[in-house]
Image 1 (tube, rainbow, N blue to C red):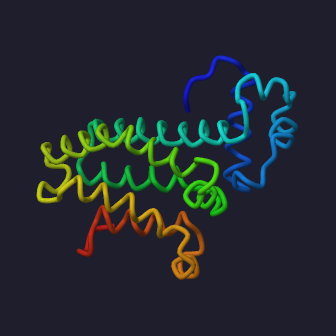
Image 2 (tube, rainbow, N blue to C red):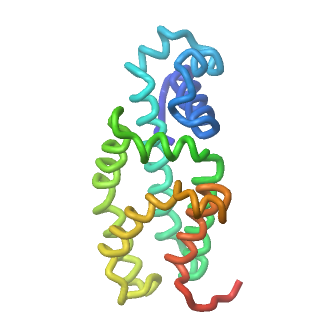
Length: 194
């Protein structure tokens, strides 16, 4: 998570994350965030002009934290297989508490600018991630025959599957769909050792 200096701002962002993850963005009110975080509305508005900007901060913290952990794993002193396993665990952990409502509020938004925010944030970090993947290919950790730009583009489009009603019947939650997709990306169709 981004480092905040003020304890009240930290309380707001942590509380918002927990509430948004559990109920989605739209169902949580500023009043509920303030009450749970034990801060006044005046304090809330000192740091965030509205709930939308707070939601963006929560999402940005999620992405930035995940990228930082991804880079730690990638550059860590472990085998390629261990790196892939740790990356899969990172994906599981980062989506573990997220509700379908939270995901849908962001990815299906057409009015509040949340979907555009995600697209902009992804573009901001795309070059960093692409460089890390190329580095991993050069080191032999990832398959050198895979076109990383194509894989990245496909992975962004696949996110549209996380609220597919047919897949949700089979997998029961967006997290399970993400894990299945990540497994497919990381290991393909071939057998692997457990």
